[in-house]
Length: 243
Ligand SMILES: Nc1ncnc2c1ncn2[C@@H]1O[C@H](COP(=O)(O)OP(=O)(O)OP(=O)(O)O)[C@@H](O)[C@H]1O
Ligand SMILES: [Mg+2]
Image (tube, rainbow, N blue to C red; front, side, top):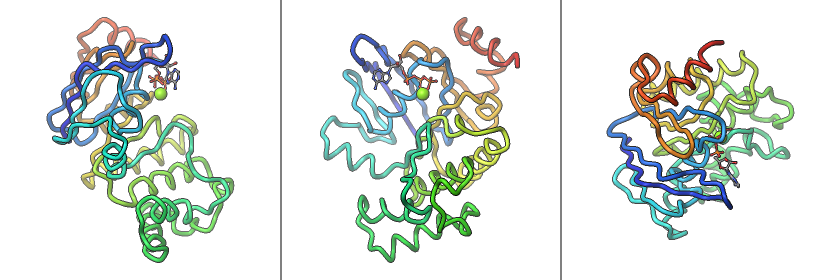
C-alpha cells in the first residue's frame, strides 16, 4: 500500500489526539504503529480507515484522497476491513452469522452467498467446527480469529487492526499473531497498532512511532528497533524492551 498523511489534526474537547501528524509510506505490506498509551494510534487508525474525519489535514491511500463527504467515506470504508481493540462480535449470533450478517446487510450479498462466503472464511482460519457457536462459547483467541475472518471475508483493500491481541493471554496471542502473519504472507495489506514489540519487529516492513499526536519516527523495523533516532523513541523502547 501507499499512504500519505499530511498535517492531520484531530481534537476531542481540549485533547489534541492528532497534532499536525504527517506520514509518508511509499510501499508497505504491513505498517505497524507503536508508541505510548494515549499517543494517538487508535485515532490515527480510525482516521486512516475512514471511520472518523480529521479536523484538518489530508489523507491519500493508494492514490485515493479521503473526503469528508459521508457517501464517499462510506464507499471507502466498505473496501476495507476492521478489527478494533476489544472483541466486536455480536453476542447473540453464532460465529457463522457474525460473519454472514454484515455481508448481507452492509454489502448486499444474498443470504446463500453470504453463508457460503462466511463458511469459506471460517474454513480458511481453521474455525469451521466452531461456526455454530456463540461468542461466549469460544475462547478469546477464537473470538478474535472469528473477528479477523469477518474482516477479511470480502478481501479488503487494507485491513485495519487496533491492538488485536490486547485482551489475550500469551498462548492466544501467539495464535492470533500467526494468523496475521499468514494473511500478510498471502499479500494482504495491513495497518495495525500493537504493544507487542516482538510481533511488530517480526511482521512489519514499516514501523511508525506515534507519540503526542505525531509521528516521531518511521523506518523499517531493523532501523527503528536497532537504532532509533529520536530521544522520545529511544526512551520508550529502552523502557518497554527491558522486560
Ligand atoms: N472519542 C474520544 N473522546 C475523547 N477523547 C478521546 C477519544 N478518543 C481518543 N481520545 C483521546 O485522544 C488521545 C489519543 O488517544 P488514542 O486512543 O488515539 O491513543 P492510543 O495511542 O491508541 O492509546 P492506547 O495505546 O492506550 O490504545 C488520548 O488522550 C485520548 O484520551
Ligand atoms: Mg489505542
